Length: 103
Ligand code: FES
Image 1: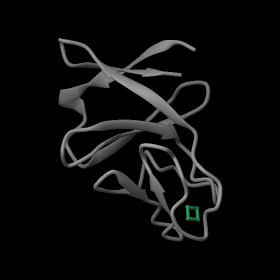
Image 2 (image 1 turned 135 degrees about the vertical axis):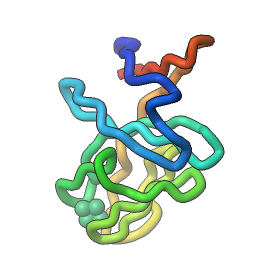
Image 3 (image 1 turned 45 degrees about the horizontal axis):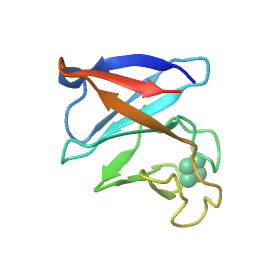
Image 4 (image 1 turned 90 degrees about the horizontal axis):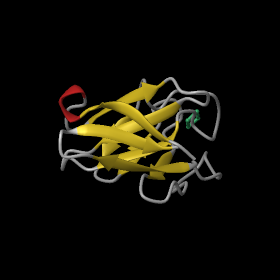
């Protein structure tokens, strides 16, 4: 596991997402409360980039393709059609506002 630089907190507004183009793409989320989470980028139902296009609601993410919902803290699939959890990754922020993903 490596500590990989993702972005600065200024580059990711509250309530938004981005895709990190690592070897395995990772979705980075910032909730409306400013909490940061990271999961595998692809929805576990079909191929859909959650970092490019998804809705963050509280600490959950909704995939817009078929409306599957996942818990960002655990990756757990909360409703059909998804049944498989997303892989989650730890996120750290340093004192300079630099965001890192442990992946
Ligand atoms: S691809 Fe995400 S719910 Fe179907």
